[in-house]
Length: 281
Ligand SMILES: NC(=O)c1ccc[n+]([C@@H]2O[C@H](COP(=O)([O-])OP(=O)(O)OC[C@H]3O[C@@H](n4cnc5c(N)ncnc54)[C@H](O)[C@@H]3O)[C@@H](O)[C@H]2O)c1
Image (cartoon, rainbow, N blue to C red; front, top):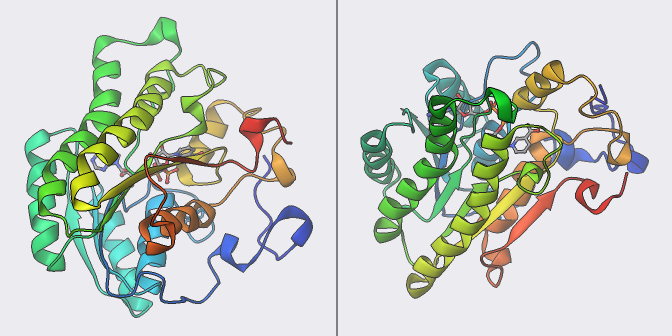
């Protein structure tokens, strides 16, 4: 299934960063970051298959940020916050169902109160029913779009007036925004629309110097990635560097976009796919 080897290997681009073992370098020193989708679905090996949201929560704290972690899965988001604290960081845990608009709005206010300030927002929640066109129902389509897209709009709409000038927003889109190969139209269209929303939020945030960018992961060995591979075993038969990506590799891309290192990068989609979308594999 092309599971990443957990050993350093330059030929497969496997470095300490890719397995979450690199020390912090103060890249988010003094920042206040809310991660929505900071838990991860249950998995057979949680220590190995870190999700994108857990990875960015731990990494942001390691790099000096205070973190608010939110998810629908209470046990999982509390686990993420515990891991942040064990690593010496500060974290609060918040339970939210982002398919409910009033809960998204309340969460933004709660997170700002917990953090003191809000200058970083990571919108990582995403679901996929994996239904081909002939199996989609109005209900399945609406739920996927409510979670993957509407909740992001509501979070940004609520957060922008509350955020500190010079802050940054990061959305989690997908390589699926560009390709129908997953035969998963509700997911693919929601991820494509996120890239447009990203530009709209960047435009709305411009007056306050708030940037908005998106990461678009390819085939990742996260719990969601493993569930997709279980549905379609040939999903990752051929992948760049002979392996799927890790949640840490997504998190490092988010870290760059959250940090002041990317101060002139705005309305951009950063594909974290090993080059797969460009035909490199
Ligand atoms: N894994 C991949 O191959 C891949 C590829 C491209 C993009 N992505 C994107 O990365 C993001 C994270 O994915 P992951 O692979 O870490 O998966 P994951 O399923 O482990 O994480 C998603 C998190 O969202 C939470 N969530 C689901 N519905 C929610 C709701 N209504 N309210 C609040 N929280 C809710 C889940 O509890 C879970 O903790 C998603 O947006 C996904 O679309 C993943």
